[in-house]
Amino acid sequence: PAQGRGGPPVPVGPPVAYTLQVSMDGTAWGSPVAQGSGVAPTTVIAFAPVQAKFVRITQTGAAAGSEQWAIAQVRVFAK
Image 1 (cartoon, helix red, strand yellow):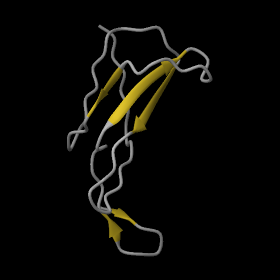
Image 2: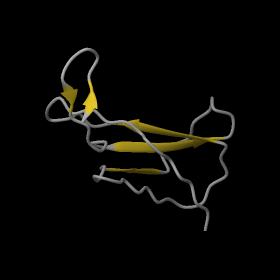
Image 3: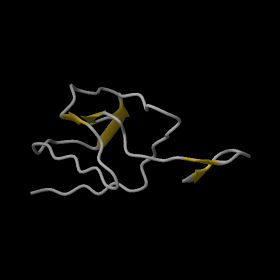
């Protein structure tokens, strides 16, 4: 668990639900190219190849309890 600010550890989990958008300029974002539910310990998001310089992942679901989520690492692969 992650350490809370001056408090007890905070449970950390995968994103409850997410959308993934891409952008060429970091300002104009298109419709989501992927969406779904997170899976512990690693959430893999696959989507059709697109031209992009920026990736935005937004949590769209609410945790049932006090769980928080964080992105520890992002790896992008092209086929």
